[in-house]
Length: 270
Image 1 (cartoon, rainbow, N blue to C red):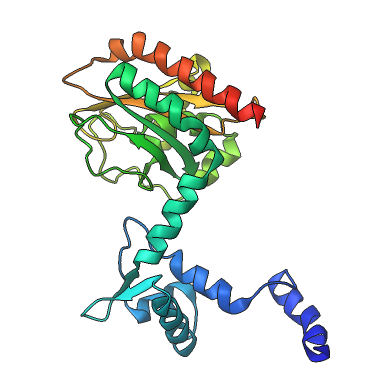
Image 2: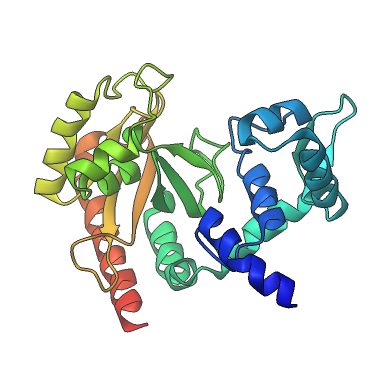
């Protein structure tokens, strides 16, 4: 015990925390490598991306594989296992904002007959925390836990609009405006800034075929105890064949704003 205690200060200087468990930190670094664009990696790629030596990476991956957090494909590639999905789903379901939003969002979906979503900003992406989907919507591949580029979505633009200039620049530092997007998407940071300024002024965000052709949406903020920074955003997403932009600014926006107010009141009361 004494040897461990004497070693703690040196370890603390190296890591910034005397309570840090290096093996656990390495395991989390490995899990963070995977997202919607990186679904599998070879062990060498894991080493290259994390800087973890091959013998250590082998043991970390083996441990995570044993627990079901990683699984190995026939070609030797490694991908997230079912345990990661279960853990992520439990975290989303257990989120207080998801729980408090469930009934208001369900009522909105039934009242409007359209798809409704709840999302938060994670870097330059919008993470979908809740989704009640109309079967006619074209984006069938989006589900709870999915992410989309914030610069192209109504929820993402809305949340970006409330960031200070430095925060906006940091959030979009890795975003490539040349990547695939809908026909009306912003093609530069300057163009996006103009759209964000309008969003801040009007208090809601429209997306008109910026994510993909045939899809429109309108989004408003949900506030917790901080009246200046949204805790999340909600939207109504529609097929462009069913609603034009004017319709999104009309009754759909009114219903959406009422739902956001209801959720905000619940958040402030917790």
